[in-house]
Image (cartoon, rainbow, N blue to C red; front, side):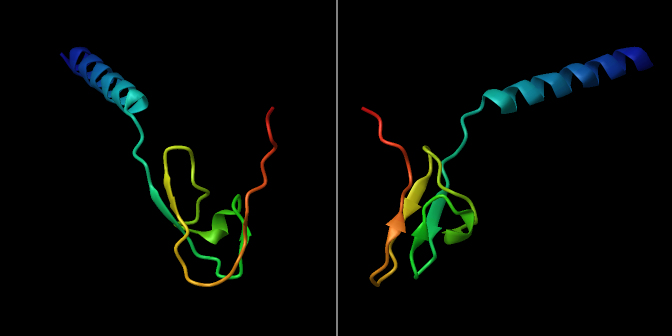
Length: 76
């Protein structure tokens, strides 16, 4: 009986992990915080401290004159 319980728990854990792995990630709302300007790719310039990804919402809404530098290579 103990072996069946361990097998059941193992299967349940595997199914839960598989569901979490294929679940779509949620977009995060990330806000620019560096009023002096800076590089887009620096996590410390954002709240929370992470660089926005393709699925995230990036907000640059602070008043003032500053430059946010996005350093990416151009593609033809």
